[in-house]
Amino acid sequence: MKIPKTIKIYCKKCNEHQDHKIKVTKSKKARADSKGTRRFQKKHKKGYGGKAKFTIKPKKQTKKPNFTAECSKCKSKKPFSIPKKMKKVEIV
Ligand SMILES: [Zn+2]
Image (tube, rainbow, N blue to C red; front, side, top):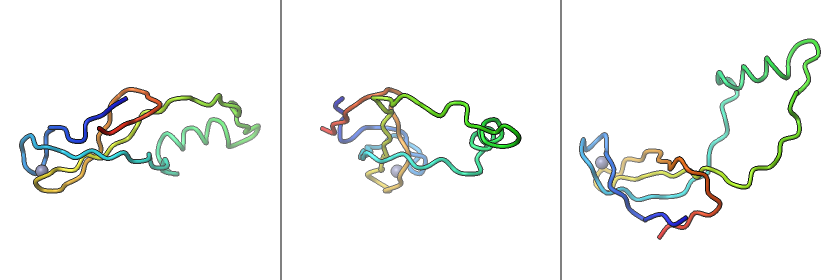
């Protein structure tokens, strides 16, 4: 999927819409002590008979890409995502 280099979105600092530069970034690792991770650990990995229920996972072919949008005026960065799964990301 082709994605434009700059988009016009709202900037919190400037308090108005500004042109933002877009860069592709990798998603960060989930925190070890987040609620979701703790719930998963409790349910599947801890205690008597604590065995991972779902060990084999099919590999997914596509991912939701992560972007960072940088404001052209105040240079503040913010995470930006398109809620679609895609194989290739081309910034045009
Ligand atoms: Zn700004």
